[in-house]
Amino acid sequence: MPVTLTKIGIQSVDITLAESVEVSAKIEAKPLLDKDGKFADGAAFDPTSDFSLKGRGDLPAGLAVGSDGGSDVGGLFAGGVTLVTTVKEMEKNDDWNAWECSGQNFPNAS
Image (cartoon, rainbow, N blue to C red):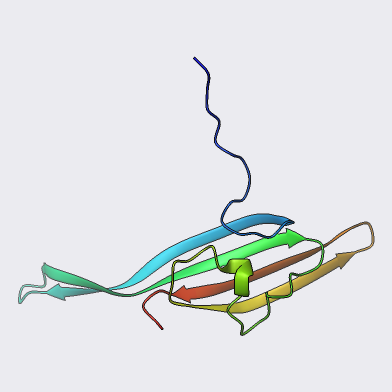
């Protein structure tokens, strides 16, 4: 029986020289305690996602601090507001240029 292999590589962004993509999701949680200090209920609110990208070569033009990352991060999230908060560029004498960026997505924002 033939084996179907999953395509290897980064699929979530369309940056040719991307080396890694990391995305994490989180929420704020508010527990409700009863009169005895026991957990009675809880609510989740303010979901956010943090992302970080690393790559080689020149920094893609859309990845600027304060921007939404344009089409470079557009495939990571289905909606909301995305904000690039950190950009880092590196140069070395004996290696390719490198770059890193990170930011947040606020899915409930418009």
